[in-house]
View 1 (cartoon, one colour):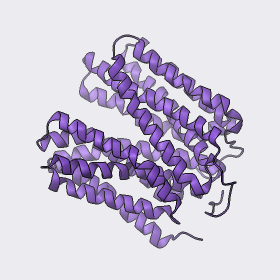
View 2 (view 1 turned 90 degrees about the horizontal axis):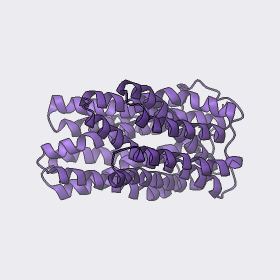
View 3 (view 1 turned 90 degrees about the vertical axis):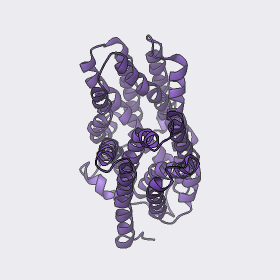
Length: 394
């Protein structure tokens, strides 16, 4: 098996900017297109009279597609090459994204979702593998902080585009497809620097989930809390007495925290001997913030202040977890572990909204906070246990 990297040896300590710009630009283009496409599809289904339940089930195909695609991505990259696999995924995503306009049968949107989100999952896995492989160990946190910030900006740009071009006609679909196709350009020009997976991973795919559990559990919690929080925070806020505009602004504040904290957290993680310590601290802050919500739900400014920091720490679980993963593995094992990382994120996006919604049904409005407390509590027990029983070796 590929041995974990030590913190003091490895590649030459300089950033491979061409590779990093290619991978970050590619996945950011996909992020913009997804930020445009997800609300677009939901609104079109609503206009066609599709029930909210069916819209939710159709949207959940994103997580299902990610869980299906993740185990096969590394194998395809091993056979075809990283850059070739990514370019093929770009083409699949662009064609299937445009297909939503030309195929009006709602039931055919389910396989289309599987293709579209399966392709974008492959792009996320291989882009993050490329970034992790190209980043020098001592600056990995900084590089991944830049990646997370740019990606968040991409997702934020998508809804802005949607507000400008609307949902009528073929234009929004064409714009989305063109943006996705643009992702192929940086990949093509930097194809000579894409990481080569010259051997098959040594373990079964599912074993990689348990190989670096502090990282894979972090991204599971991130997926559950991020998607569950974004889905139910507006409901929680309006039930607490805030207006819809105030509830929407709370989401904006949380998103600003997610973007603003990533580079500082990445820099901090580079200075820490054991990144698990930072993951544990962020989970503790997330737990404290969740516990405070029922106590401060009467005051919008207090809620906004907590959610600003809370949003940054939640998103930091992804950035620092990915950095921790990259510090432990190399080569084919890193690619396979990256696939497991995205798989766990997808599971979190499916589990989180279900648990939070059920908790609010059982415990009332404060069930929103108690469910998130449970997620962070689980992670704290795991991370502290790992640090006690599996201390970092020098």
